[in-house]
Length: 460
Image (cartoon, rainbow, N blue to C red; front, side, top):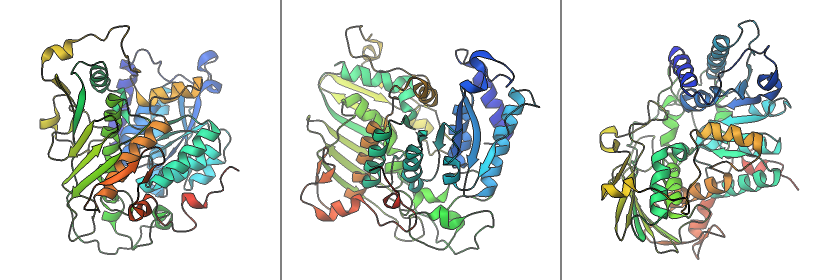
């Protein structure tokens, strides 16, 4: 998103959200005094940070970005310029806060005046900075997926719980009214006994070979690689140098698992909301998938995954279904999708086929009113706003680490199942495969020193 569009879009959003006061000059006292602000550091300044996380946080008056960090100094400095310009427009130009730039987030975490961090890094850099931020006592907004591996996710969950940190996962479908409505209709029996879900989730195509290139002078490529294997630099393996379009790392297994984790955590989290399985998981997983036979990008393409739950529900996920979630019960069905919403302009959304945000086998299902004595799910209007509010109240956010980890686990075991030609039995409480050591070995990855969650000094 271009800087001017960001400023205009954010200013308009702030003006229309009348329940959230706009940012006021630093000289104002009382409830809007600087001491009442939540000082935030932004870790990762790429596509999703600029077009989504910064934009959707900065518009709240109780949030104050004071620092940014990226291993790409060009992106870090451009994020600083974006934030500084926003505050100059919203505050007294002589008194705005000058955003500090860091190139190593660990230095940022040492600053005691930073209360919280937003982590918008590539997938392989989610758990480690989140763990270290929690150990430093910072509250956290973490982009999904929660972790690169199940082991990392368990490590993060443990530290967040011990330190009593407010951690919100970026599964913002919980803030979309249609997903909550669909879950409420299903959980209150409007389609009868729920027995099947069909989740539409696209795959990624393959691509060209990656020729080794000189590392840009403004990129700390060794730190960008982090715990993953050391390989030669190529632009399609990292992120574009001249814009903020969809980065190539999303399609390489070193850094994630593709759309099964990239979008999968959104849909599996929403599905669990409707199934009332947010703190558990499936008891089996079976999958088929196509993988590129050549080129640098090597995550799954077309795929089909089947999950079975102890409560008798079966969930099928494939790119062959319309993007969204279809709940099927004995008495009808409800379908829910994002509609035309995109978190980022380069999200791979099939708008034409996903435009119907909420649908049902019978229109009367959608007209049904949820009574005061029925299940009413938590209602929020903003994922980032809910996080900020919970930082102040210390109440659990809508997408807590416990729920976020469980949704991510469904993604990760689905990816693992793509590499086996049989059904895998899963223990959702112990979080291990039953009698399959080969699959259990894939619940973790070897980490390249000195990076990785295994090399952090944990709490005793």
